[in-house]
Amino acid sequence: MNSQFIRRTLLADAVISGAAGVLMVFGAVLLAPLTNLPQPLLQIAGITLFPWFLALLWMSRAESVPRDGVRFVVAINLIWVAGSIAALLLTNPSAFGYAFVIAQAVAVGAFAELQIIALKREPVRA
Image (cartoon, rainbow, N blue to C red; front, side, top):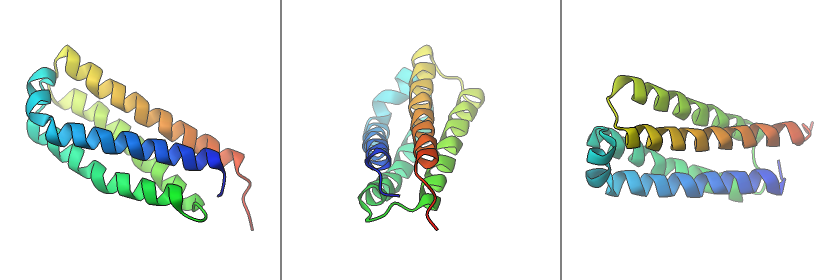
């Protein structure tokens, strides 16, 4: 896949993921009491975003973006959304915690949707 649309979508996903990772890892001490989410949960979630950021950045810059790679990105993004819902059900977040988790889940879901649109737009090459 070589469209600018998929490249920009992957790059935007990378930038937001990287920023969220930095916020959750280095801001967990401040975020935990505001969100009423466990500090280790915030830090571990943030740490997982660093390699994700690098993978998305690499994919957005690849000579040809692999179609299966985009499918993998969509799957991981949807897993993140499901994990966010689970975090809300398994913890006792504050109102700000709910807003924090829901906002990032909506953003990740939106990236998944944009990536699905890109897959549908790009013709399959034999």
